[in-house]
Length: 91
Image (cartoon, rainbow, N blue to C red; front, side, top):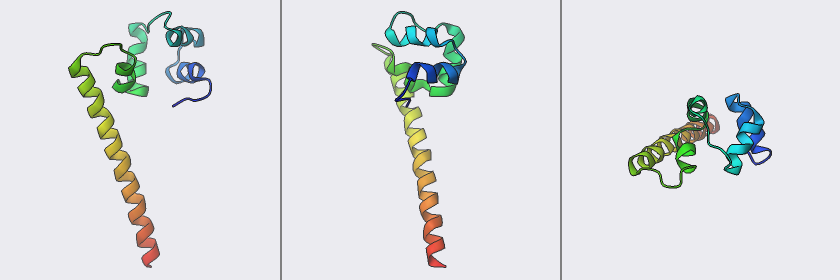
């Protein structure tokens, strides 16, 4: 998602100090509860579950469902764009 300077990008997106996020990425510390909400809002449950060594099965299922819904919405948006292009070509 952030191929260049990921810690800086995440810090900016969730309004956290860059050094704090760098520590998370290095595994030195874990996000406090103050940052769980912003992380979930910005990156979704799959991001949080992906950081867990052994997520609970129900939590993993929720993350997969969230990803599926996101992909379905993206597919619908692509289908809509293709349909519009087809309609324009038919004029």
